[in-house]
Image (cartoon, rainbow, N blue to C red; front, side, top):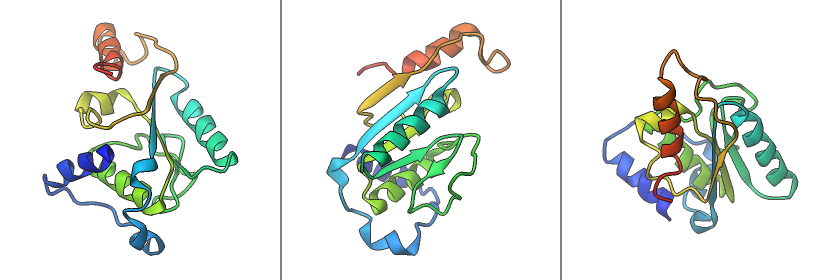
Length: 162
C-alpha cells in the first residue's frame, strides 16, 4: 500500500520510532490494502470534525484510529487515549509511528488532523489521502506565524495535485 511506501521512505532517514504495544506486534502487516485515510485541515473545526468522523466510523463498526490535537485514539499506541496533543502529527518520526500503529491494529480508517505546521514541513505530501476535508478558512487565523497569503497557500497545498 502507498502509505507503507511512505513509511519505508522515511525510515531510510534512520528516524527513531515509538514502540507498539506488545499485543499488536504480530499484526504489523495486517489489512494494509483496506486502509482509508481521511485528512482534515482548516482554520477552525479540524479537531471537532476529525473526532466526529472517527466516532461515527467506530459506532458503525469500523476499526478507526484518530490522531488529532484533541485526542489520539489508537489501540496500538503507547500514547494515552483521550489526552490532548498540540500537534498529533508533528514530525516524520510521529508519522512513522502512526503508520506502524495503524498497521498493527489492522485499522480500516485513519483520521488525521492536518495543521499548517505539518503542511509547511512537507512530510505529509506523500501520504495517499482518500478524503481531504477543509473545515473553514480564515486567512487571519495565524498571523503571528504566517502572512494571510502564506497561510492560504499552505492550506491550498493540501489540495494540490489531487
